[in-house]
Image (cartoon, rainbow, N blue to C red; front, side):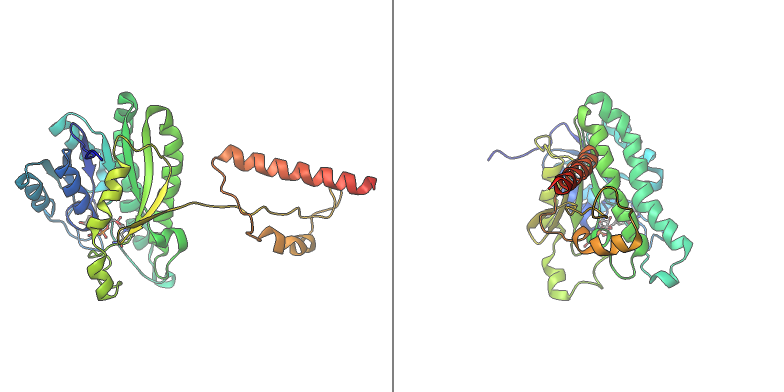
Length: 311
Ligand code: NAD
């Protein structure tokens, strides 16, 4: 297969001073993209500031690539996008990757722990994406990545703030995939699991060694390539493996025996095992299908009841 390249493309990678973002920036830089290596250089909990991005820019340049450092917080995402425009005159790819942790059991979680996580993960992605959106629309081209987490998709003890923000990013991507469709803006979500300073005390040492960010970078790079057609996908990747996740809905059940009956708490209890039975559960592609599916089921129920009463 011909090499997939990014010549002429400008990519912004947030939080690219280390971990996953660094791997993304290095790979894109090695394939011809001009890269804005953004990183606030904060600690794992969001405190402090330093110039992590410089070493990554140097590495890209040493290998013959083009890159510039940006030290703004994603909370001021418009400044990061401005760095791309000021230095390279355009932006084509935005990888929202910056992240921090403030893990605590819910009892101990302060409002500040909640707000800071939301500011960096969810509001930060909103700010960068909103700043780039008009350019993407005008040029009818844009590739955006949101970074979620299995903690968001499935929940994880001690991560109420992080889980909520991370699932919020999936919701944001779902809607932007729709709004961006006619402008050739593809918005997808990566769910990575990799060795980084965020996971060094969570993953067992042998796993930590094996879970290299470099194994996920090609997945993300493919998802921001011009040949990539999907939008609104949630892709989980680790250890050189990738899967897609999506929501499914059960076939459900009417909450009464016949259409003229009342719905009561007791009738809900009686129907419950059918409501939550996931055999034959369906993935519905869009919001209109969700409503249509319900209307179809109700009609079916009414017709069946009519036939039963005529027998
Ligand atoms: P990391 O700590 O190595 O990288 C995150 C980077 O973001 C850091 O360099 C940090 O300085 C930077 N950053 C923090 N706040 C910032 C801000 N306000 N503005 C700009 N930069 C900021 O961690 P990582 O594991 O590489 O994480 C990357 C992303 O992947 C995060 O969004 C994280 O939540 C997500 N994630 C990681 C894993 C994993 O297994 N490592 C799992 C699920 C999700």
